Length: 378
Image (cartoon, rainbow, N blue to C red; front, side, top):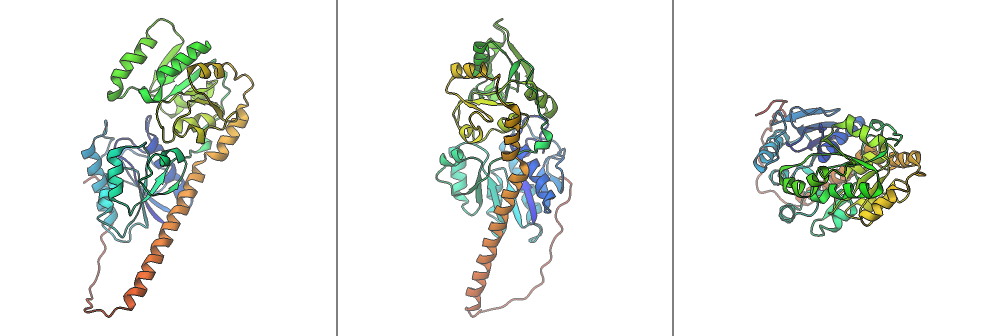
């Protein structure tokens, strides 16, 4: 198949540090190429997806994200996609503005993955474009958007070979994520202190979350109680070092997280995840095998104290079974094939109906196809 993957223009593919959606796009590009497909990724010019080709409108990420940049990025991608009617079999987009452009090319089979929790403004957008095949990333996410006809739920995956086993002997617990209220970094600090263990924290503060950080996190960092190390935002290698040495990774979220890639990153190195029961946590954590689900800070602290007999090798083995990006790519491949088969069946049925009608006029002409846009910005 000839597949177009449309990422955002806010983060490179794969991301240098923060960027869950872009990491998923990178894994899809790599594994769909390995499965024998012709993949083109529309991302930023500094992206380095493995396999296929890269096209871009913006040479570097546009950060912080803003709507007009994403619209320009989507317009560039769809100009390239529609420049030749036969250039792609499937367009799989991961950014919402693409749906508006897809509606102008109804013959192009479009898949859209919903990467976020419920957003009323986006729900309205999705309802305007029912012809796209919508993909969810967890059962809980889909339960919260019943208005949207989700075609299939495909859980995320990563490359297990990029996650070396860790010993967990660093004498600390880890937190990885944005320093935002919904991610619960303040809860992670409280639980670690209650358990009497250091917490090492990787993550940054985005502008909208600055008031929360100043109110809840900074005082905990500077109150003199100690036991907290803030490492800033981490790229892949230092992130793995943090996870591999941790006794556990704390995931005290306070929102309906659609997935949470950091959970499977932790499990893939053998480090258990201790999380609050929101969003996809119950779908990702297997109790006692890859982690534990707790109700509050007190239970999280108690579980931290009970990790001496945890089987890290079993955790990692199970994570490799469940969370491979090759599995994720194969599930997408099956979805694409089903959509194409359905589309072909529809065209054949339409052809039968057309044969039964007497045409009033037949026009003949020659169709010319433009070459797909190259690797240059407009």
